[in-house]
Amino acid sequence: MARTHHRAIRSCWGWMVIGLVFAGGSQAFGQRWISGIPWSEPPIVQPGDNFGPPSDAIVLFDGDNLDAWEGGDQWELKDGYAIARKRTIQTKQHFGDVQLHVEFASPSEVRGRGQGRGNSGVFLMGRYEVQILDSWENETYFEGQAASIYNQAPPLVNASRPPGQWQTLQILFTAPRFDEDGELESPAYVTVLHNGVLVQYNWEIQGVTYFNRPPDYQAHGKGPIRLQHHGDPVKFRNIWVREIALTPGVEAAEDAEPEAAEPAAEDADQESDREDAEPEVESDNEDTEN
Image (tube, rainbow, N blue to C red):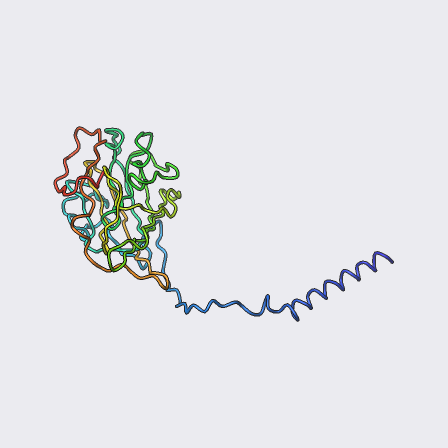
C-alpha cells in the first residue's frame, strides 16, 4: 500500500510541474527573445565537392589558365596545375575580407634546406604573408615554417605533408580598417587551416610581414592576392576565394589600389641555402618578402 501511495505522489508532482510550465512558465517555450536587429535572409550557397569552389566563389585558378593573374603567362601550366616560374604573380582583382582556398605541392625532389626548400607564400592584400615552405623534416626558424604568419607567428602545429604531396591552405582573413586620417582603427586578423588542421586562430597581424624590419601599418584599400616565386618550382591548383559580407555596423575598406611603396617586395629571404635558385627580377622593396 505504501509503495502505491508513493507512486501516486510522484505522479501527482509530475503533472503539477507540467502544468506550471504550460501555465505560469509558458515564457520558456512560447516566447522567443528577439534582438531587434533586422537580419536579411542568408543567401543559399551550394558547397563544392572535394574542396571545390562553392557556388558563390570567385575561381582564381581551375587548371585551365591563369587569366585572373597579372604575370600568369610567366608560369608553367601542366596537367591541371601551375608551376611557379620567373616571377611573383598577383590577382587582377583586389579583395578585402575573404575566405581563400589554395592547394600547393613542394617539389618531390628535395633540394636545399631551411628557407631554401619549397619556398613560396600567399600574400593577402599584397602585404600580409602566410608562408608556404617544405616543412617536412626541415628545420628553420619557427616564424618562417609552413603556415606561419611570416616573421610574426609560428603555426600552432606543423601539419605539413611529405614533399611532392598536395596540401591545402584554408585562410579566413579580416582586413585592417583605417580612419579618414589614415590611422589604424583595427588590425588585420587571420585564421588558417593547413591540411584541415587549425594552425592559426584569429591571429592579430602586426602589420606588413617584413623580413628585416619590424611590421607596421600604412593606410591602404583593397589589395591583390599574391603567390610568390622564390626560386622553387612549387605547384598550385584549385585556387578560389569568397568575398565575405561585413556584419552590420562595420564599414568596408575603400576599394582603392594599394600604395606603390608598400606591396610586399620580391624574395628578401637571406636564409635561403639554395645555390641554384633563380634570381627574382622585379624586386622593388627587398625588405618585405622572404
